[in-house]
Image 1 (tube, rainbow, N blue to C red):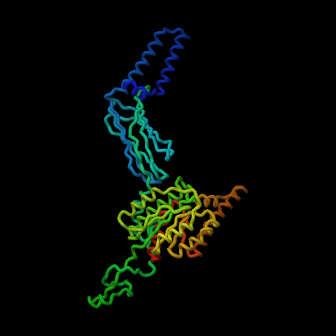
Image 2: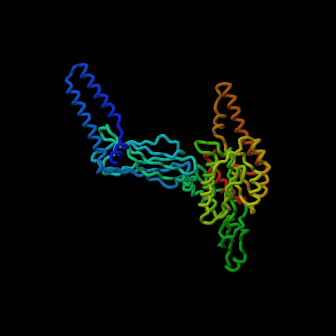
Image 3: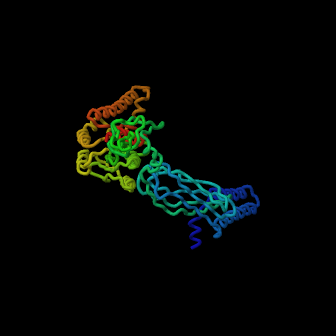
Length: 446
């Protein structure tokens, strides 16, 4: 059994083959130049001794080696997640180790080899970053460790870091980056700014003493008479309103942008928007659709609602069909009885495609506050702005400019029919969507 283990773990290094080639060359020279054969024999025995020493050194039972992988059981999609490999060995002298990570097939990564010289009796950490672009279960395999000495003639191959199943969830790291969004009135990439509040909130909070600048319409005359001092009612933004994010799972949302599909951008933004809405005491729900009804999470603000939404987002898969907006309208009429804010993440690549769905969007906007969020094709915009060097490039730029113009015309047409819209580049989707939600809340549009 011990011999079988040695054979399975035994590998010959490049230097071993060079040494064998040199031995053969010495024997050839000894024959051609009529040297004493003893010279070639001594060189051969010396080489054989070095190989034997290397072999015994690497495979002595008392020499121990460990390598463990430190990786969370849940990692964040589209973000860089840290992974740590921890090595330790008891070989008397430093050894050269090459580590090969067996990555999940979804990563399609080839830069999974790490080399180094490691001293004995000391813990060594190797850190790297993983950026997944698909949600789901990722199966990590072993960490293959190839150990060699300074001679580099013999190498020992060992398996370490047991296989591990990791779940890739929607980008929960963005929740930490955008936690302050729930506490500000408006956030932009360059900082924050306050929006002027329009209208008057109807949700009473408490009674306080009047100070200069308070709205005189809020004077509470009964409390003023009792306290013999001018008292006013204090109001807060109306809470417990329903906010639903509706995600289109149709084929157009599978379009990739910088390694991530448009649907995954929408999913990551939905998770952040859910956190912000729940922090502001609104009830948050989720609906997905394509050619049929998909996931449905009833709007609520209970403590575990964010976890429920996250699990539902984790299970979403793209369906390569044309999305049916008529079924979406019927689902909203059936399941969402109360007037709510509907944030619809979808995509239109042509004005004709948007006009086909416009009647259903108008029906939804009649019963709810509808915000249609779709994506700007930044690559086409950059192509349209590129100077043309010849007639073919001019033709290409003109076509690209027409698609960019069509997107802007879609926004104008939706606005003409009283439907709010948000046209945004995919990488700015999260901050733009949250800004729009906070703006509508501040203006008490819901």
